[in-house]
Length: 115
Length: 115
Image (cartoon, rainbow over the protein chains, first blue to last red):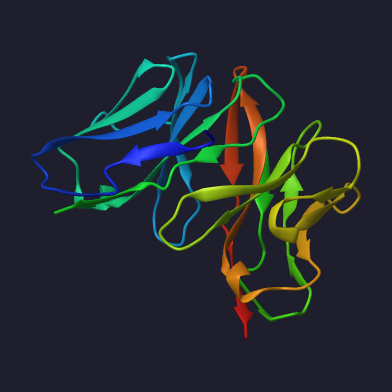
C-alpha cells in the first residue's frame, strides 16, 4: 500500500466553524507533513511531525492546529479561519525523518473554501 | 538556506519532441534534489531524485534529469513528449532543519504539450 489518503476532498466552511482535515498512511512512514498550496503556486510547508511529535511549525497561525494521534494518522483542526485560508491542503509522508531517501508521498489534497 | 529556482513559468513543446524543464539550485554542502509532477486538482507525485552518484538520473514515466555541479543545475528531460505529460512540474531541495527533513519547492513550471 503506497497511498496517502486525505478526507474530505472538498470542504466549505464559514469563518466561525470548526472542522478537521484527516490524513492516513499505512506505509510505516514516521514523518508526516502538512502543506498549503494556493492556485498555481508551490506547496508551502506548515507542519512536520517526526515520530508522532511536532518537529517543525513554520509560524502557522494558531487557527490551524495539527494533531498526530498515532504513526498512521495526521489531523489538521481548523477554527475561525479567514477567506484567505482557502487553498488546497496537502498531506505527505516520508520514511525515517532523518533518512537520506527524502522523497515525499502526497495525498490528493483537501480543497478548502472559507466563506 | 537551500533553494531551487525554476526560471520558466511555462514551457510549450510539440508532441513527440524532446522536452526540458529547467531548475537551478543553491545549496551548502551536498545537494539532495527532486522533481515532482502535479496534475490538475491532484496531489504531487514523485518523479526522481539525485542524492549522489551518476549525474544522469532516471525516473518515472520516461523522465530523466541531469545533475550538473559546475552549472548548479538539475534539468528535467524527456526524449519524446506526450500530451499526457502536460502538468505542473516542481523542482525541490531537501534541507535538514534541526535534524529534521524539510523539502522546499521551486515556483513550478507548467508544461504544455501540443498535439
